[in-house]
Amino acid sequence: MYILKAITIYGLTATLLVGLTTLVFAQSNIDTAKQTDIMNAMIREMSRDSQKRMMMARWNGNDLYSHAAGLLLENDFWEGIGISQEQVWAIREVIDTGMENDSEYQSLHNELRRSWMSFREAVMSNAPPDVLEKMQNDLLNINAGMRDRKQAKEASLLNEIWTPDQTIRMREFYISTMSEMAFVAPHMFEALDLSDKQREQLDTIKKEMRLELEKHVDNLVNIQIEYEEKFLAIYDELVENLGTIPNQEEQQRLQENTHRRLRAEMQPKWNEIMESGKELADKLKIKMFDVLTDEQWKRVLDLIDNPPDYIKNMRGLMREQRVNVDTPTGVWQPGPGSWRPGDAIPVWYRLERNTRSRFPRGE
Image (cartoon, rainbow, N blue to C red; front, side, top):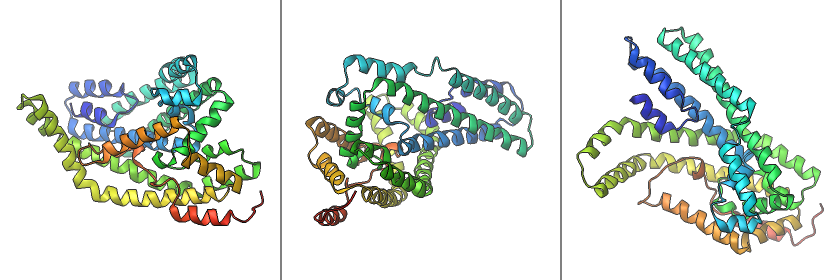
């Protein structure tokens, strides 16, 4: 039961691990509580690694297409980008079934299953800590390989569907919606016809800022896990209380109040992380903005200040979804979409850069 709840909370892609674990534990007469703790710790680490890689994929540009594919439910978006209905169907098929026929991914999937079974057996037989540690590292490496392969394969398949013009429009979309995005990623500036030198400069910034970024991502993932563990700790009591309430609206109110209480408890820590995240996001943006020529900077301003109607509509929708989560009546769920930089461009930088642009600047 506990393992099943943990899997539900942590949402691992390797859901197949649940049945294998609970089945054997149920048949065992040894200390299942200790085994459960070990297995849950491994599940948390795999979930932590998966979440971190998902967030870093945006920075690396690996989810450019898959993230946009998630916006295809909004007609304004794919019509504005110029995507045909046939392309929409093709993109959705890639997202839904793209990995089913990928032999490398399926091989990793089978390897993960075998490794998890071996790890479970080692836990049951009270294997030495050094043996378990090695098996845990192997599991993490396989899990990471699966996610990396999925991102690379989807990007390759989706790249065959998008046209070059649609790719440019999509990157322009990211620039225009910068205020609602998690952070500025170098790949979006490819919409501005970068020179080779500028690409090298952006690549250098990526390398210089990576450790700071990863530290912040770690903080976000850790608070997500902490929130989920706090909820897990009161899960049984919540279920029991819900069973005494026949009214569905009252049940919903109890669940919302539970999340609200946990959110209030963690809000100070969350505010601290968000403030440091905003500082980091502004630092990233300024470094990247400084790489742009005056003409490219004017294009960025135009995309942010005067976007097409479909981008205005999408930006409003993204802001509405964000506000609904962050208001006191919403259910606070820190995660990949929660790191927001605030203003698209810091006001002081906009003024300083516009003053600077009055004087001709070389390429």
